[in-house]
Amino acid sequence: MSAVDTAALKRLSGAHHWHPFTDHQELAALGGPRIITHADGVWLTDSTGARILDAMAGLWCVNVGYGRRELADAAYQQLTDLSFYHGFFKTTTEPTVRLAAKLAELTPPGLSRAFFANSGSEANDTIVRMARHYWALKGKPEKRVFIGREHGYHGTTMAATSLNGMKVMHEQGGLPLPGFAHVMAPYPFEAQGQMSAEAFGRLAARAVEEKILAIGPENVAAFIGEPVQGAGGVIIPPDSYWPEINRICREHDILLIADEVICGFGRLGHWFGSQRYGIRPDFMTLAKGITSGYVPLSAVMVGDRVAETLIHEGGEFYHGFTYSGHPVACAVALANLEVIEREGLVDRARTEIGPYLREKLEEVLDGHPIVGEIRAEGMIGAIEIVKDRRTRERFAGGGKVGLMARDHCFNNNLIMRGIRDSLVFAPALSMTKEEADEAARLARLALDLTAKDLGVL
Image 1 (cartoon, rainbow, N blue to C red):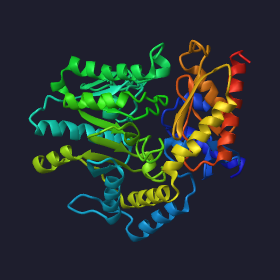
Image 2: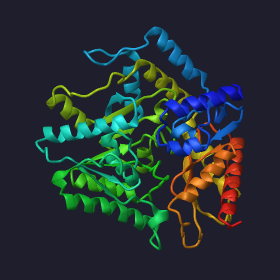
Image 3: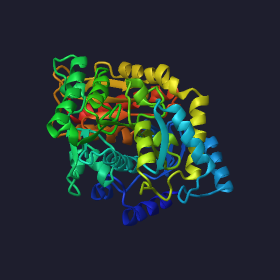
Image 4: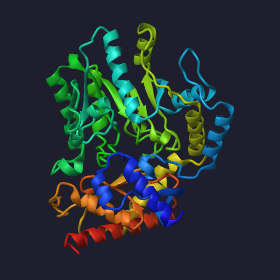
């Protein structure tokens, strides 16, 4: 594309395209958005011809990397055979059925049924309805409250935003809705102090139990959590945390929802984060990596005790979407899962490229004056930015330093995300070691420039 085309697209975007999570006045002051035109592997190309190393796999989702012909071929073939039909009126399509069966095979035991939607937000909205309907059928309609966590992220619809622990999102739209509560996150770097990680994990889990007891177990429908909190800053819980959550939910008869939108399909070096942490969920939320982001698709995996009650006692469930189980999306998902299995990408994230990327970042950033911690699990991680490495004191500004570092990444053709005062990363599971080396080099450059801006270097 020519520079004239780029300028025209930027003008059109400024006039007509409302971007998600964007300050449009700020975007206009920067000259408009970057126009991405091509992608291959972990590399993007923009309309000026610049190549950009995408260490965020789009939005945590392009697990197999960009440009996979197998996924494009699957979409083309399905579009040719059957471009669309729905799951209403006692019908379905072959890819939809096959994907549901495949997900039941891959997910932990007891999650035998899949309900399809288009995004993680829709899937979590569906879970809210299913869980409340379940308790009503059990003669306990007062069990309506959902407990989430600070920094938790579960989507942007009204119910999903209410599940979130993002206060800035709650400031718009009169949220959260009634019936949603939140507790502390299992965030060792921010709150651990002199306590051991294991003790802190148990402390954070007890906060859930204390909230249940304060509300009354008879009023609580479910607890929701991501195995690793992604958009909240890649908060990796101590290993003591999830076993306690399992116990608490079981003892107080609370449904447990594992939001695997980011953690699923190999991101943590296991098919699902629930397998990594031994979570025993009644619901599992799936999206993103289910198709590696090639087409929109999400799923709710429903635990057997809930499914059997809804099916045998609930009659018709008045819920669904036009595109629930879209045959093209399901065909692409099946092709995507085949690539992940054939190339061993799940094990590779755990035993090869995941550890290599973390070790390379630790090597390149060793002793850096503003780096307080590098943490990772599989192919997701964070670099904490601090003023004082010993005390973990933050810079003033409430997260502005993280955005400063992010901008230096973007300006040097690396995509990492700034969340509060940290840089987070989640590249494709197919990343090569040479590409990991380049990501680490560019991250060091961005942090050096950030330190200079702060007067530290």
